[in-house]
Length: 298
Image 1 (cartoon, rainbow, N blue to C red):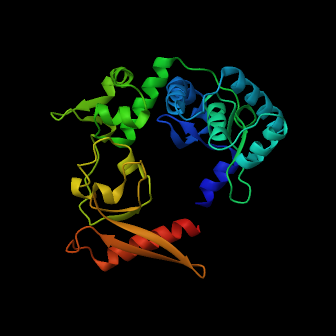
Image 2: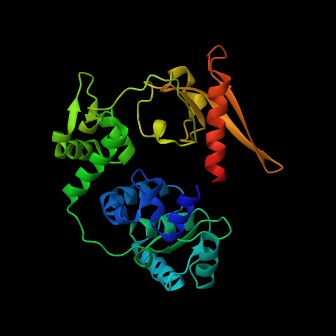
Image 3: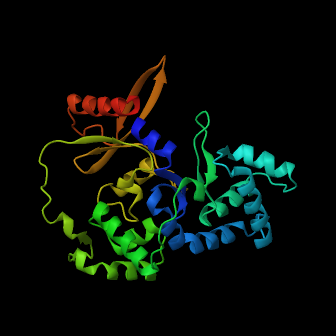
């Protein structure tokens, strides 16, 4: 945990909106090509969501906001959303929630700002060009191939629809991306794509249990989740508004939920299983709890 926090502080990892879009943690060297690949789709999504909500913003207004944000943040400053909102209001750009979120989101996808150094546990924004060195641009096809390769290396087996959902690409773009790396992929009879790096994977036979956090990749990375989670239990793992809950993974299957409480500095973890008759040894559960406690306290 501390290593991740330090990487975020140094700007080696950035927190920003990209892909679907939603919050993502992105390696600094990847931020620009990933933004370029998804910026136009995200802009279109913002425009669509703004209709009927009095959130229409002109390109001129976006430009004025970006110019002001650059002046506020230049010199390697990091400011919270609230600090930026107060500053821009003082300078004549009147904005309130959720308008400020949209303005900041647009500045993110245009590559003006990214995550800065947290202040008192609060996320901040900083200038992308001051946080990340310039790198050579890559062609769009290379970016598509790179994204597809990374997805299937870390999420195989998966279907076209899964990749399109995770990446935010259209089905046409997702097909193109998969076609660009077809020599890296193996296709089975169920139209699942498996990256060639999995050919030598050894299947573990031992009993394995993990406590997965909310929004974990194990579930959120796939459009169809029935292979690891029975349909009747979907509502216990995520809701229709896109919120994912902490879940228990046992031998590849999602079998329950867990929650953390902190009392007098002590971390306590409560587990609830979908099927009370599901047999899991107490030792396995306690080992998973201890791994989590060790991680958050490291």
